[in-house]
Length: 359
Image (cartoon, rainbow, N blue to C red; front, side, top):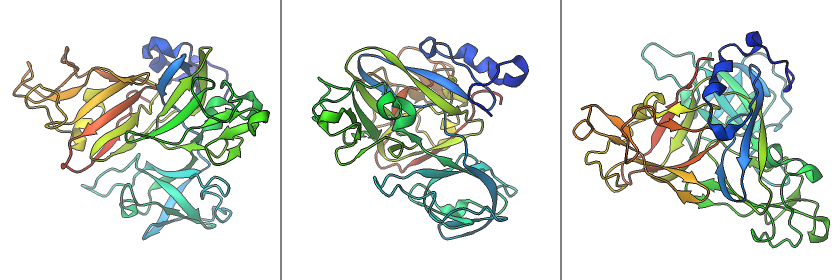
C-alpha cells in the first residue's frame, strides 16, 4: 500500500479516531491502515524524541521450530543468507523479529509484542540475540514479523536531502551543527552529525564512518537526544502503526523508553502494573523506595510519576500520580521520550505495553 494513500472514513476505520486525541504538538497527522506518517516537532535546542511508527514488515510467517536461539520458519521463505544480519560497514544491527501473534497454550503467557534483534539468518531460519529474553518463549505456530529497524536516514533524510544543519568542520559541536545522540538506559552514544564535503562528507558521521545514514539504526526504546542549532522544523516519520502490544525490557536503574504508539497511552491501561511495577507506599516518589517515571522535556526532567499504593492514594486503590494529580489516565505521549527508573536490586521488568486504541 502506498504511504500517501487516499484517506477516507472506510480506509481509516477505527484508526481515524486516534488522531483526534493526539497532542497538539503532533500538528496534522494522516494515517492509512496500516501505514502513514506522523510529524514530530524539532525545536531549536535539545529535543528528546522517538519515532512512534515502524518500518513495514519485510516478512511475516509461522514458526515451524525453535532450537536454542534459532527459529525455523514453516514453508520455504527463501531468504538470502545473512540478509537480516548486521551491516557489513557500520556493524549496526539492521533487523528485528517480533511476535505478531502468539499461539498461546492454555494458561500460558501471551508473548505477542516480544522482540529480538536478528544476528544471522539462513534461507529459512533466523538467529536471535537472547540478551533481552529467552528465545525459547517462541513456540511452534507463532506468527513472526521480520522488520527493518528505523534508521537515522528514515528520520532526517537521505544524503543531501537531510533536514539537519550540516557539520562543516567535523567537530560535531552543537554550537555549529545539529548533533544526534542515541540514548540507551541513561547513557548517550557517540555523536552523529551530517558532514559537508569540506569536512569529509557528504554523509552522516558517527565518529568512525561516513555513510548515507541508511544503516545507522535505532532499536525500539532507543530515543534520540537531538541538538537543533537553528530553524525549527518537523521530523516526518513514515511507517506502520503498531496495532498489537509491544514489549519494553526494563533493567535495574534508569531506562530510556519511547512511546511506541501514535496516540496517548493512559498509564492505567498500559499494562505497566502487570509488569511488576513497584507501588509508591509513601507518596515521596523516591527512586530508593519505588519505581518512577520521569518525562523528559528537551534535556531536562519534568515532574516524576509514581504508582501510589492503596494505603496512600485517596481512592484506596493503586493510582498513578504526577506529584499533583492522581489519575490513571495520565498519558504516555506519542514521540516523547521518558526515563523509567526501576528500583535497584529488584530485578528487571518485562512490560508488554497494550495498544491504546482499537485497531
